[in-house]
Amino acid sequence: MSNPWDEEFAPSTAAENTLRWAHAMGASTLGEAYDMLEQLAFSNDVPEVLGHDDTIEDVREELEIGIETAGPDTLLTTLL
Image (tube, rainbow, N blue to C red; front, side):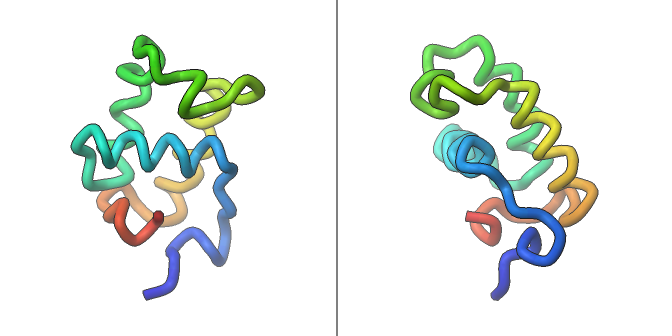
């Protein structure tokens, strides 16, 4: 199956890492991963997930585009 983001959206490394983190924390859809951004913001995982150059707000904007493009019910396993 092709990645639903390939045609209109190319996520950054930080966005991909965030989706992997959310999946490991139990999220199964893009919408659930988006909802977990606040949890990430208050966790000790931010530097490990985002690195030092990216921010939660940058990733939030990317995931909003991803939700518009692929839909909130898109399975993370198809995006990673």
